[in-house]
Amino acid sequence: MQPAMTRRTRLAPTPSGYLHPGNCVNFLLVQERAQRIGAQIVLRIDDLDFVRSRPEYVEDIFRTLEWLGITWDIGPQSVHEFHTRYSMALRHEYYRERFAQMSRMGLPIFACCCSRAELQAHDSVRCVRGCAQSTARAGADERAMRLQTPQGGLVSVGGQTIDLGRVHGDVIMWRRDDLPSYHLANVIEDHDLGITDIVRGIDLLESSALHIWLAQAAGLSGVRADSYVHHELVTGVSGEKLSKSQGQASPLEHSSANRRWIHQLARGLAQNP
Image (cartoon, rainbow, N blue to C red):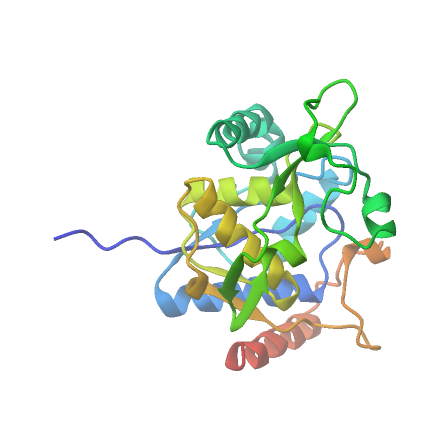
């Protein structure tokens, strides 16, 4: 008789700004899900964006988790341990080798010189210069490496069916600044950490579909589509999505009143994911 597989979910904050109430609600929903299904919680701080990552933002993550009363089973237990053992910056060459393995598998990966502005100008998610047919490789010209998602490739997740070719097109796997893309690193990390369940905002539904397909295409164990939970977002007073990129320069006020309010928000969303 096969032993039961350990279920794991994750907290995956990015240290690109101070956390906001929406991040806190997600953390509480991850904790609620873990308790309900008997899963371990992994803390994975996604500092892949080395340019925007700051030490004070990493400190804010640990301080906020402590304020919310959230504990985890796997991952860094302090800022120092994160920087010395768990930072994604320490795994750069590992990501490069894993990506090279994917390339050797025969996946449709090619060097692309199209900029984001060019794709937007053509209203396209596909390469517009015919780079896939070129023999040029990434290198001194700093081309990005893209992966062709299948035209008409459909992935069902969260009660919706996502057309990968229409939504993602030729998706970047290795950036022109010599960094792995979020999608690539995310799938590798989820595989390596043995993640089985993911709780994330509804705004990441299309990314979930890509990650499900990419893990399968790359021969990695991935999270099953029915093990994703997508919740509604906490929005601002005008209904806008909360975002670190909106210039929120102040850390969240760690008051007891704010904590009660955030817990109430999370309870409401937990009842209707």
